[in-house]
Length: 297
Image 1 (spheres, rainbow, N blue to C red):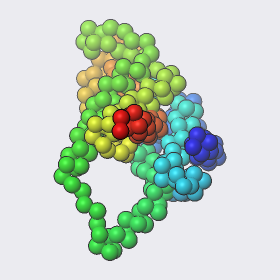
Image 2 (spheres, rainbow, N blue to C red):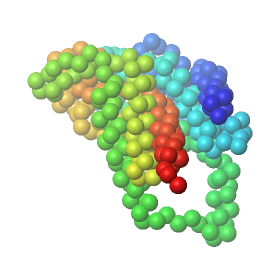
Image 3 (cartoon, rainbow, N blue to C red):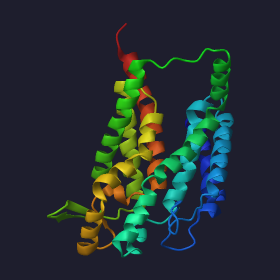
C-alpha cells in the first residue's frame, strides 16, 4: 500500500508539479502561483486546461493504484499542486509591492474566493479517481435508484463543514507562525511564515479536522477539504478589512499580517490542506479498525 501511495503521489508530482510547471511559473520574482490579475502567473484561460489535466491525472491514478484507485487516486492532484505551492512566491511579496490600501484591498478581493478555484481543480482530480463510481451513479439515476441522503447525514455534513472551518482556522493561527509581536490594537501581528512552516501547519490542521470529523460525525474527507475553499473568505471578512489594512500599513512592515491565515496563498491552502484532510480521514479509519480489533469477543 505504501508503495502504491508513493507511486501515485510521484505521478502527480511529475505530471503536474514538474512537467506542467511552465504553465504556472511566475515571470517576476514577486509574482505568485495564482489566478489574480497582475499578481499571478496563471490566466483564466488556463483553468479549463488545468482542470482537464487534473481529471486525466486522477484517472491515471485510479488505474495505477488499482484495486485501490478510488482511495489513492485522489492524492495525485494535491501532490502535484503542492510542488507549485513550494516553488511559487509568497503573500508578503504581493503586499510589499502594493503600498496603497486600495491596491491591497483590491488584491485581497481577488484572492478571497480563489481557493474555490483551486478546490475545483482538486475535485476534478477526485472525479477522475472516482470515474467508475460516477458512471455507476449515473446508471443508478437512469434506473431510478437514486441514493437517498438522510436528514441526519445532511446535518452531519453541514456541522462538519462549519466545525472544520473553525478548527482549521484556529489550528493554522496556532501552527503557522513566524515572528509574532504584540500590538495594542490587534493583539498580535505575525510575520510571513516560511513555506515549509505553511506546509506543515496547514496539512496538520486539516489532518486533525478530518480525523475528528470522521471519528465523531462519520463524514468523508471531502467536507473538511471543502473548508479550504472557504477559509480565506472567512479570514478576509474578519481580519483584513480596510481599516485593519490601513492600520497595518501605517504601523507595520508589509511582511506582517494581522492573522496567519492571511499569509497563506490559495494554492498552498488547498494543496497542503487536501493532503492533510485525506491523511486525517484514513488515520481515523485505521484508528477505528485497530480499536475494533482490541475489543474482547
